[in-house]
Image (cartoon, rainbow, N blue to C red; front, side, top):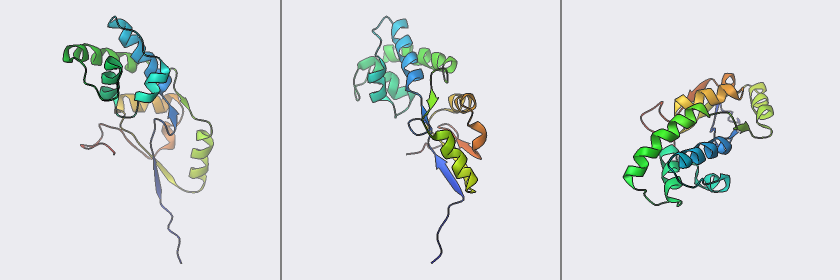
Length: 151
């Protein structure tokens, strides 16, 4: 029986390769301060990540997973967050333990590596470059690369 060996392994970024919550927390907390609101803290932000920046901003404004914020607050907050995150994409984020070794191992076994994330390209590319893993990937698909995001 012949064993199937894939040629390409696609890997997510946030929560898989990279702990980006420290940067996201900094940006959420600074956004909240600029809006005259209380910072949220890392424990809450860690619970809120995973559904994209717009949802993270909504959750920060409401303090809840599924609530909808006042549209005026959101319209003020969202661009503030984007500006902060553009300046703080990789200042506090880090690779999880073993990621460098894991990527090296997969490449040594002949696999091509791809990166797939819902994070916008303007944040993905600088993050991967700053953490020294950009060149490990044959293809990088960000949240705005294609018409439809990954599930």
